[in-house]
Length: 138
Image (cartoon, rainbow, N blue to C red; front, side, top):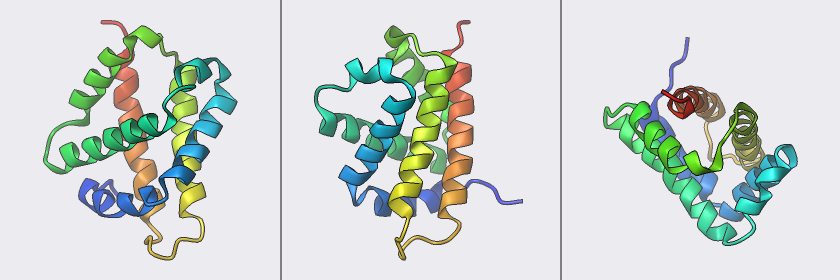
């Protein structure tokens, strides 16, 4: 059974983000299609939001590759986003939007290995498991 390799994803994630506009548009398009009530939080500064998303994913992978548990960053994320009162449906929509954006950008890219998508899926499963745990009240 394959396992998530953060170093492997760290090597290949830049290929996905090399077309930032495409990833951003696919991600936010799908996220807001599923949770239109979140649109108010993304109306301004879409490029800054893209940078935050990219930085968050890279930091998760770097930390994990360095042996730090994802739970630490998930707790920090949950604390910084507590004011938004995120619900389970928001986590589900975000998870689905990230998968959709990855697939959209990866489609037709010959420089990505065939197992990069599987690795990204496994990574997201771990991340969202930890985010849900961190977002639950004590």
